[in-house]
Length: 328
Image (cartoon, rainbow, N blue to C red; front, side):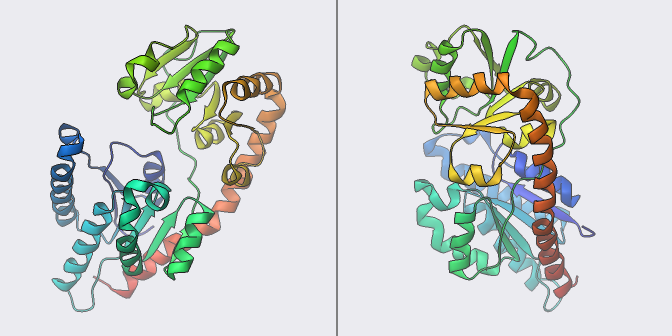
């Protein structure tokens, strides 16, 4: 894209945002005040992040701005800046912005109150991106420009180090230890398959001590990994959250048996319910059929890239048309 773009994320990291910013040739900015993490400090954290966002936009003076939601306050700050930046610039000039909405924006109880505000901001946005067909349906009901854009395939650094090298049969579990992830079930599945070594990525600091004590010996907690070590981990098989990483490295994967995932990832994946028995059985099936599954996932990768490209091109067109409509 031949315009200067800035992507704002009020979180410590987002693979989707990083990949999308790279595709646009833009700048990614993760603005998250870890020192102000905590329920009672959240309002102060949002204020600080809002102030830093405003200063960054004033300094960079982008042609277009992308912003991730939630939290709703990130696109709110961006929308106000784009509006005021236009009013203080040339007549008729307004910086276009796009909102990239995660599923929690629409279905998380924490942000349900903010949907009317999101609707208003989406009306002013050049386009709103969503990660599911159901969320796209909501945007269509709102009569706002929206695109269902699946994640782009990330470019992982060459593998280094020895992470993921222990054990004859190895499975990588891409995890953030969030409350909605089946970590207890994965621990239980590991007990059903003691001959398999499970590598759980992500920072386990938030894991409850009681759950940590239940960790089987064949489960290794890697901690948060830099890209080069993470790529080495992904040279093994991938479980659940790393579907796009699995496609990137052309490795079979196990994912939750949800209708949306089945529609998106049609070949090279094994679908399981989140029970210990089903996860363990899925791993055995993946290990025994890995040659066939790898061929399927290579074909799936090509199909996904081709299916996604028209939606990505439409997204770029909406952004650049918005910028040309209000020339600087």
